[in-house]
Image 1: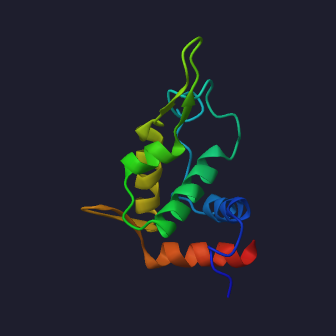
Image 2 (image 1 turned 180 degrees about the horizontal axis):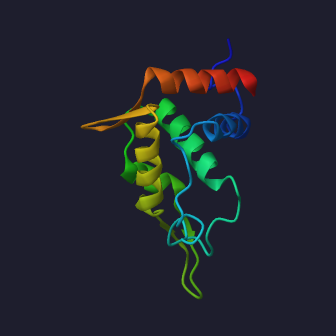
Length: 135
């Protein structure tokens, strides 16, 4: 059986996102296409599947790093903030998108919240393994 580690990240995330589209609990909030994902971004996300891809990426991150929290994910999804004259510096992503996505994933029963971060449930692990064999 193919593991999520064996399949390329981009293909695995696309396959997981397609599975998440079938879940009624996972829906993009109304405001998600009107806000930037962080201070480093110049514009709001333009891709239609942004929400599902971000949720799939979060699931994969929780699989690879059990107990990961919002703050570490803010750093991961952040980027270089461009200044006019001075040098660029890394800026964290906004936390609202990550928190809201985690809340939906918890409601769907794919992730559980504990004192020291988020962990995959058995249902979430099965979804990832199913998607990794499909990719």
